[in-house]
Length: 136
Image (cartoon, rainbow, N blue to C red; front, side):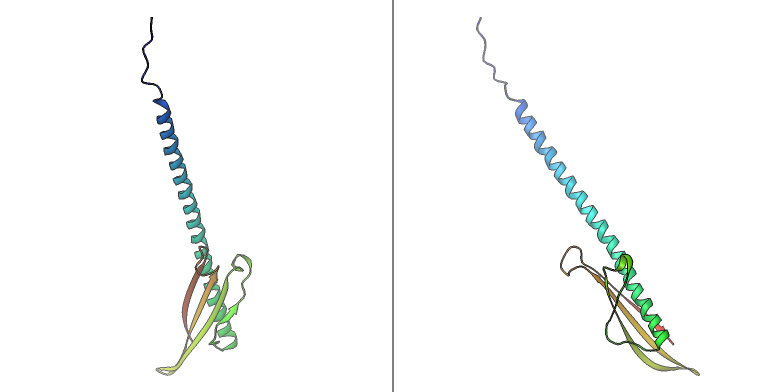
């Protein structure tokens, strides 16, 4: 009894290697997708915080305008506390007028607030600017 040579050996090994490569590629893609999703979510939160910091600057500028009746034309830094402390906020004011509206005299003030966090050009940089007009 002689044995015939088998020519089908080794078929499972290439299949196993192919499956391992495909699974590793899928795992890499999922990790990349998860990382991108987390970064996007974090930047969305930072954008909202930057908007709130800029809005706080507008409120500060309006309060200064009503309290002191002056308009700071140059950018004035405003220090925030709490979760917005990481933002630098600059507030400036522009005065125009007085305008005559019937029997009334009206002054118009435009307050601009810019909130920034991070380093420009980096992934975590965020900036928001808000302008508001007030008449008095």
